Amino acid sequence: MPSILSIPNGLFDLSGRVALITGAASGIGQAIAVAVAAQGADVAAVDLPSADPQATLDAIGKCGRRAVFVGADVTSPDQMQAAVAQTERELGPLTLAVNAAGIANACPAESMPLEQWQRVYDVDVTGVFVSCQAEAAAMLNHGRGSIVNISSMSGTIVNRGLLQCHYNSAKAAVTHLSRSLAMEWARRGIRVNALSPGYTATPMNLRPEMADRMNEYAEETPVGRIADPAEMGGPAVFLLSDAASFVTGIDLLADGGFCAQ
Image (tube, rainbow, N blue to C red; front, side, top):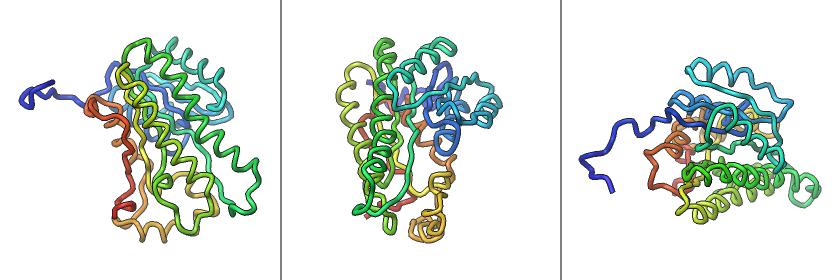
């Protein structure tokens, strides 16, 4: 155990590391991809093949880091295994991952079609598990790694005025999945944590059923505003970095105080 008098500099430095970020073409995934590049990591930006990753790749390039776009569906084990293989082939050994790919929509519970419920669970829960499984297969071989799964404060509280029981419960599952994987892999060199944003100005949160309420949510947030996606970069970098070397199995709420009791 290091002495308090010998804590090294550069605890947040990710230089020489390779990160895979899902959902990296936009929103929180994009912001985190750029944040980890700014701290020195090379980045595989993973998103659907139909996504436009150019803004993400350009921003990573401006940080002086290497970037590669990998088109993959996070619900497909074969595609995610191939994504990890491509990442390692083009950038090097994978030791960092952030799973930010997700979807959201709304519908009253009593009339929600099963297909709508299932699609949210397929992407937001199964997609996170499939991604973690593929990433950990590489990290276990390397004997080290850090995974951050993007959950939501909606996994802790129920958002007033939003009819999204499928999304809320899916994010609660992501948080507990992260804890479970953390315990399975803790002694094998992999840390797993969840990061739960509050209301954030992403395309997902500016969808029609959200847009009319964002001013209200800003007022309800103790800091008096919603987050910019870039504000999720710092918490993600912390959890990925050696600054969090003794941190695993937590849910870090980055919510402007919304869940404070």
